[in-house]
Image (cartoon, rainbow, N blue to C red; front, top):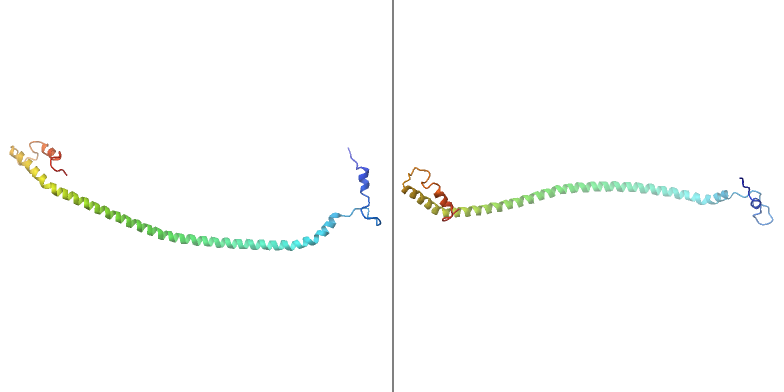
Length: 171
């Protein structure tokens, strides 16, 4: 179904829009052309602002690239200095650990020396008594009829067991 404009709407197109007296043209004026003409001057002023903004953006991009390059160079130098310093720190740490190990080794050698001296002293104090006991056992076995050439006393391993049983001093 086709709709036709109402008669009043159709007639409103031709009504007078101006003050009485002068007859307006039959076709309404082009408002978009009037608006474009009205905005032409302020928009032309904005063209200069656009050019200025573009220049600012280009300078900012150039400055950002320069700063990035400076930061890369600074980071490279920092890494090089850190690597050099790390080598020095490793050498110092190794020297410190070597000194500590040498000190510990010296303490251990000294402790071992004291312990060896203690064992030597203990052995020297016990040795005469043990030699006397062994000699007495050998003489006793010899007196009982054993031969001096016999490697094992007549009592078997009895003499060796007596020495280790705790009689007298033990090593």
